[in-house]
Image (cartoon, protein in one colour):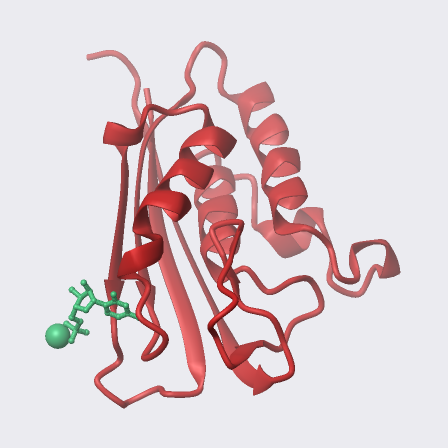
Length: 157
Ligand code: C5P
Ligand code: MG
């Protein structure tokens, strides 16, 4: 069998008034709260970024882009993802990301109307066709109304 690699990533942020909600690189203007974070707090991109690194045992986002580093304050998470992808590709030989599957848990707003835009953004960032980008949404059923959480798996082949 040709070599395959798989990486899993997760991220969560507390939601607060006066913060913008960005998920998968897409701004959600109807959100009344957004993540408290050193960067833009894009939990979905952070989960995908960790999944990219994890597939190659390259540590995690904080190891490569420390949140104590002022250079990363308010950082565009797409830039962090691209940086991690470059590091992972350097370890990956001929392999590259072939598929991403992600779950976002958020009570509100509804994310379904943004699924196409979020999937297209991930597809562009990972250079994947849309039919290899699965994005699903869940509420916490009220168990974590003040959090946004994302989990992602990336397959390399
Ligand atoms: O969490 P729950 O199973 O009740 O979510 C039902 C459906 O609502 C999900 O399958 C998803 O399509 C949608 N949803 C959404 N935006 C959210 C949470 C859930 O569009 N923030
Ligand atoms: Mg349910």
